[in-house]
Image (cartoon, rainbow, N blue to C red; front, side, top):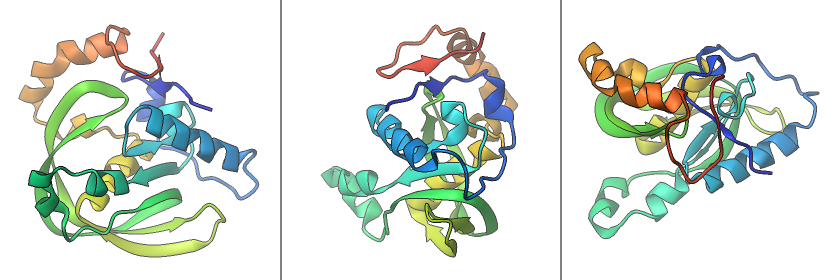
Length: 192
């Protein structure tokens, strides 16, 4: 089932999310719904707060970025190890490598994109859908998407990384999003 995406301005996007227990009710169904929602909105990552759930869960699918790259971008992704997976109760263990710039966007902040600096690698401790524990290092575009989604469960948004001047320049767009004055191809929930 496709869920509506929570829009910028909703307080749930600023909450630090709660850990998930193995007996979490209907977790498999929730994850399936999140995959449906992610693909319906043409995203590459989705965190639980974006569908109004304040739990430590997010999905990442960088296969579609790497496999769907056009000819001029294919070289940018030739060393990538793309993934499609769910992350439960993740914790960032360490950040490695240089910071690099990439133009990010967010389903909760539609039609706003900004260049954001993030590390090349992240080592993450997390549980999979069966609550098996893993520690793994990710790099490149996959590390970036993971860090973006991880921020969501920590109550952060990608626009928190831009300068105060840039924030002032996009203030009207952000205000319009929080008021529901934005057109997108997917359902959204706007703040009351």
